[in-house]
Image 1 (cartoon, rainbow, N blue to C red):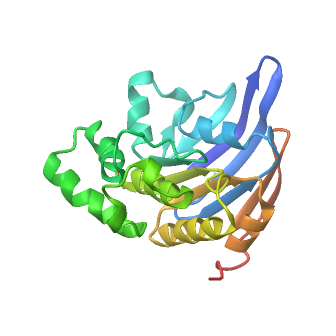
Image 2 (cartoon, rainbow, N blue to C red):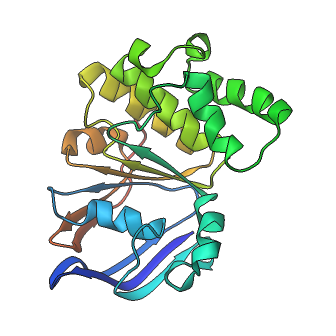
Image 3 (tube, rainbow, N blue to C red):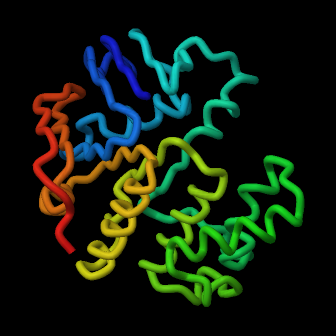
Length: 226
C-alpha cells in the first residue's frame, strides 16, 4: 500500500527526512510520534505530493509518487483523504456544504452528492448538524465534519496530521475512537501526533521519528479499549 525506500527531503541543507525506509500494509493503522521538526508532517506531504522528495522511491497503491507529472497528482490524491489539526472548514458553508464541496470539485452529480453526504454524516454521528455553520459547532464537531469531508470520496488511505492537537481530553478520546472505527471498515490510517498517550491508547503500530529518521517501530499490541 505505502512503501518508502531511502527517502530524503532537504530544505536549504537541512534534512527534514533522512533515508527513511517504511512499509505500511493495506488496512493498517499506523501512528507516527515525534517532537516538532521530527519530520512527521513532511512525510505526509510527500505522500500526497505536496512536496517532492529530494531522493528515494515512494509507492502509494503501486503509484510511483516521486515520478508523477503535475497532471497526474490529482489522481493520486483521490486515493487519499487528509485531516488537519485546524480543521480547514469553509466558514461561509454549512457542514453539509463543506463536505459536498469536496465532491463538487470532482464533478460529482447533485443526486449522488445528496445521497453520499448524509452517509458520511451518519458515520461521524452528526446527521443533526448538517446545516450548521462551523461557528455553530464545537471543536470536536468541526473535526468530525473534517473527517467526513476526507472520507466522502471513499479514499483507500486517511492521513490525520495532529487531528486531536486542538481538542480537549474528551474530544480527543471521541475522535480517536472514530478513527479506529474507520480503520475497522478497512481504511488505511496514518496518524501523526506529539501525544504518546493518545497513540498508546490506540494499541496499534507506532513509529517514532527523530531528526528526520524513524528510530523505533513498535508493532501492534492490541485493540483500542473503549
